[in-house]
Amino acid sequence: MAVWEKNSIIFGLGSLIGGLLYFSIVAWQSMVTGALVAPNFGIWISYIVLQLCVSFFGAWLMTKHAKAAGEALPDKGEDERDQLIRMRAEGMQGHIMSGLVFLAMALWFIHGNSAIMFHSLVGALVLSEIARAAWQVFNYNRAY
Amino acid sequence: MGFRELSAWVMAILIALLGLFYINAIFASARALEAAPPPNVPLIAVTTVFLIIGAIVGHLVAVAIAPQDADAPEDERDKLIIWRAGNVSGWVLGSGVFVGLWHFIFQSDGNVLFHILVISLILAQLSEYVLKIVYYRRGV
Image (cartoon, rainbow over all chains, first blue to last red; front, side, top):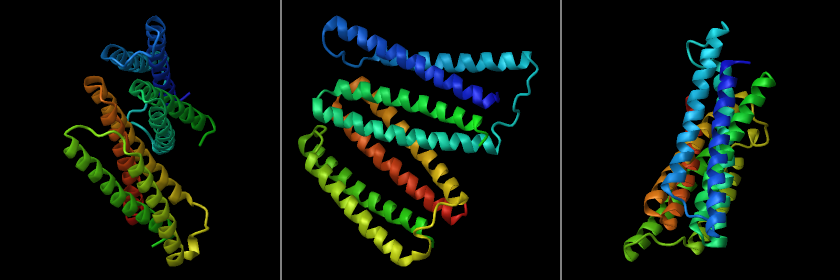
């Protein structure tokens, strides 16, 4: 498996774990209070920090493991194929995010609750990032 | 100029004009209220209808100007341009959403978050079409 492919998986996992933590806390606090919990700095920053930590620690671990195993690491960044795969995946991520942003705005119109819009937008960030990683890995494996 | 480039021009001009109209109306409303106004459904509906009508008319004109490649499937160059422009557009939208979320964390104003999202969507689409034009003009 190529280094950039592993990198995509790690960043996708970072988003998945960060998102799971975020929505677990939201669900737990909402059950305790009996209403949808309002967005707050603590939950939001914990999502961002966890996502960044998992992603960067994972990338560091992957690089260390690859070096120990004697695998060749790219010394000049992405090649043409890596760039093309990344651009396609990020373009698709943008389309998914647009759709989910529209959905979040529609939910706000329907429910009149800005907390729903906020949590939906966090969900949009998480889902679009996971979709990007999955699409990138899929394109690496079909040898595009 | 090919059909796809003409199409990008049509959409870029339309989105720029209607985006300015929408943003100007929101800012005028904010000045009058001295606060962020709630989403204006009639304004959104009118802007969307004008966008749809403008896109249909503009594309009919584009087909009349460049009929030879209007039905042609995308070639490798077209695909590359679409991916590159879409990539940047996604980043613009993602950054806008991120800014909106941070703003909401500190201000808790759903109206402002909504307007930031709309402006981000407008800027993302505008940047996509403008970049398509740039890439077509310079041959990717």
